[in-house]
Length: 389
Ligand code: AMP
Image (tube, rainbow, N blue to C red; front, side, top):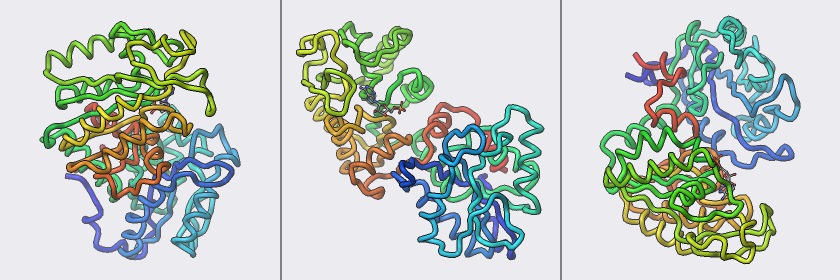
């Protein structure tokens, strides 16, 4: 049983450490995607409603010690519009004020390899606090002080974000409605091996796009010019194609691709058939940066006729408008499908928001990329251990 906030009627005025995942993309002090912050409000509000005094904490990026570029200050400014009384501090305040603590990773002990360093930091972070709510699903796969060691010195509860993520992931692994389609994209096959291994026997179809499609196309014997390619994974890709056949899982690979002259926002480009890659005017130097429109149609049809879809990883370099169409068509099909659609992973989540889709157009947008994948792979997640009775 998950130790969730239903176990608490009242925190009786105590300070409560809430470990959120406020690790949002920030550029020039501007938050690019506030999804994770807004997702945290539900738990923060509930702690306040249950007479707790939240001390909110999170990491941001991977700073090497204290670095102003990784300050949570922009997140604090954003949250002020929701919580005007919010204060910003380096540690839990003696006053008990509603507080956001500065980036946990400014202290190296948060992520130290040394257990006793992490334990000491967890103790320092807690001070007098004895209640912790773990609400940052994106970090539960890490053995870090604020996620794992805190549970040794305080009572821990799962926040509503973590609870929701777990519900969704269970739905994807236990009795999903069929047809069940897995869509994978993003840059690397090697990042997705575990999830393919775990989900291939469970799904009816697997759609492959993004940079990783070229390793699969190469495994099919096609040329891929100078596209992203993981030479050492070609054999693995071929094995997956074989295994899918044995399992009766349909693998859909792109039938056409958008080839660019170079990796550049404004690069000239041409759509070619996936088995004629070098026929583009860029020859062998061309780089495939998106799935083509015909593939988009095929993928959209496969999505529309599914009852469950899990999507992880963009179909192309969606950050460049010229190469965003494939990701957009997949996002649109997911938003319109009649069934349960899950967008997983930071990049796919920011892609759908970048295109202007509302979060509620999907069954669920996951806040934790790596953690969701590790859960689906059946790995034990350290941050969840203490949350289960
Ligand atoms: P990942 O972090 O593995 O989920 O990959 C996400 C990144 O993959 C995004 O930043 C995309 O721009 C990038 N990407 C997607 N398709 C391609 C491609 N065909 N070539 C290079 N990068 C790609």
